[in-house]
Each structure stands twice: as C-alpha cells, then as structure tokens.
Amino acid sequence: MNATELVDYISIILKIIVGISILNVWLIRPTKATKWRGGAAKTILEEFMVYGLSKQFCYFIGFLKVTLAVILLASIQFEDITMTGSIGLAVLLLGSISMHLKVGDKFIKSFPALLFLVLNLAITLISIT
Image (cartoon, rainbow, N blue to C red; front, top):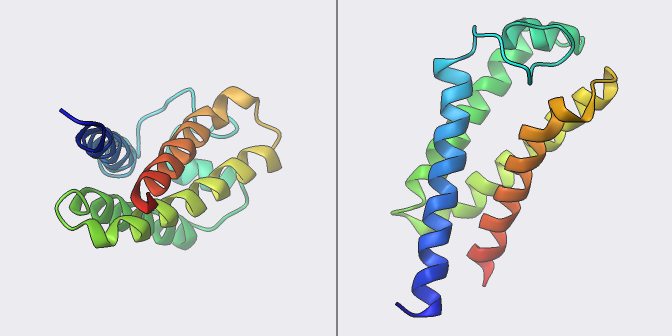
C-alpha cells in the first residue's frame, strides 16, 4: 500500500466515523440522556431549549445534520460532494460549540462537537490535497 492509498483509507474511515456518529445522535439517540447535552437537558429538544432556540430550529438543524452526514457517507463513492458534507458539518459543529459556550457549559460538554469539527477539517484537508 502506498501513501496515497493510506490517505484514501484514512479519509474513508473518518467519513464513516463522523457520518455514522451524527446519524446516531440525531436518529437513534435524540431522546436519550447523555453527559454531552447542554445544560441539564436530557434530550436534543431540551438541549435546544436550554440554548434559547426553538423546536422548529432544532428540527431544521437536525435535518441539516442528517442530510450532511448522508452526503459525507455518500462522498465515499462520490468524491465530488466531500466538501459539501465536511464543511457543512464543520460550520454546524462550530455553532454547537458556540451554544455550549453561550450557556456556560463545562468544556467536556463541547468535546464531541470539537472532536467532530477537527475530524471534518481533516476530511476537508485530505480532500483538497
């Protein structure tokens, strides 16, 4: 295996990790409590309420995150759409981090968003090289 193939495999692995994780949060675990939720929220909807955001905005962001996660996964086969998925998710993850900061959450609650932001930036960098 040469270096180019290795980088391609790393990109695929990162896309799978990010894509599946986002889908897990929004489609499988939206009503489950985790230690990562903002404030004392137990669900995603409650978390958006903690941030002072509406139910409709929660659904809109959920739609965007699910769509971008699917795009990111599809980009394994269709490389041309990688930037749409990775940069789109990176922007939304910056928003997530800013909401945690807005309500004064401890850093640990922002960690998953920060981690996935970094992974998306890595996917973007790999894609442009």
